Image (cartoon, rainbow, N blue to C red):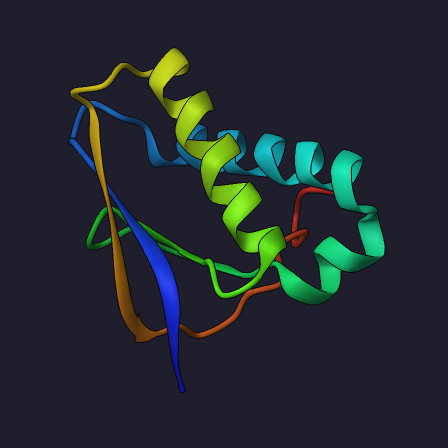
Length: 103
């Protein structure tokens, strides 16, 4: 299935573990807006360490909010020249948005 997704590609100087931790903070922020259950049901992302890419499903209001919050956090934490983000349509293998974030 093809979905609207945002593809974040990180420069080498960005630690991917830190970028994923920042994504988890964005997910927590989205939970404050929409509730944990809705975010758990409608949020999904995939982190590919080999390609230095994070793909976030933006086919729902929750996914779009996570992308906006994540982008804002990345800009403040790492700077505007450390990543690029593009909206695209491609398959995504869903990973529960809260996986690892709640523990």
